[in-house]
Image 1 (spheres, rainbow over the protein chains, first blue to last red):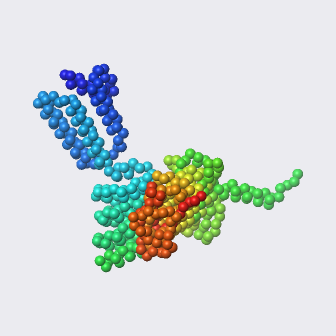
Image 2: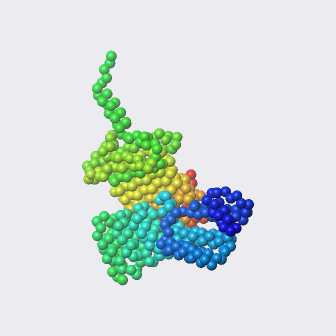
Image 3: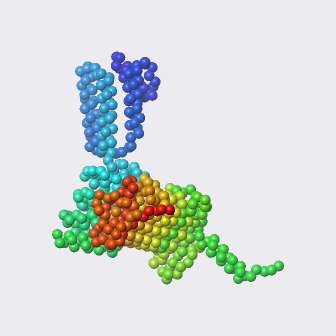
Length: 226
Length: 258
């Protein structure tokens, strides 16, 4: 009974109702939870990865099952443990959300071209996983600023897995000569992949700059010797 | 009472016409943060006007037809359009009919952000723009003087020269061309992370000490390299990005000592 009152007081306090009790422990724990909640409100919004979503639901389900089992077995849970469990689960959620927020979500929040460009360049100091590399290749098709695209291609040069259909499709759609050239420089350095068919298609575009056209011919001649 | 000479009156009227209609007053667009200029063929000259003369905000346009006859445009409406969206003034020339070109001479407040897109060809000159510039040009050179904050410039065929007198040390500079040299002049206390790419016919001239893990080919040697020069380096300990890239040509990084 005493524990129920303790719980109710804390919940009321979190809902904004003042606590009448003189229970200092309740005040302290409620204060800590309120602080944690306010910090959570300040977290950036981002779409949660489906895997993370599934993990969170699984975690909540397990928690409910555990709590139901405990209430059926009439074992009284020490409120301290209960609140530590809640705090730990919130901390876990915080960790999981932050860990999966990813570079893409951070990039989306940037308001200007120079900030985006600087962010992409700083990724040279990070170890990108395959999902990040996929996102960057997709970004080559979405992004409109040529200098940002050149910076992305320069970054992708560090990842041998960059050359695939997405990368070649991005080249096919690219209108700016200096960006096309950055793509071609990346292709020139990837000697183990045969992309000559795609390059032939690209070379048939009517709007190509002469320098670009010469570069394509040069790469095709290298490919034909391999 | 003396009568006025009709020829004199005509000359006066023509003179007034030339001066009053040869340029468009843009000071009505006072509530903006940025100016975007889009053109096809022709030179674009932009001069930033300091706060003490903020009332000067105007545009002159010179039209050259397919027979290379040029004229100052008294009425711009058939050639240049203006609109404001999201506090940005869009100045766009019409799509060319044949090989016509329109030169634009713009005087605008120096504290506005400037963006230029030159779709076909011409040269771009901008002076005293203090709130950053972004430029995209196909054929022609870009010459930037007394620029502030940052610059992102992309060219295909043409040299890029950018002289900065103040910088936002948190913002990157990116100057990328395909054919032509890249020259950046920075305040001498600038701290930058440098990315250098000169794929052929390049060398690197630098007033700054460049701290690089790998040797920079032809650093301060005026000799065209047959090998690509691709390096990362730091200037004054490093900072925001300075990305200088050309497919074909040298790179220079100078100190602005003024």
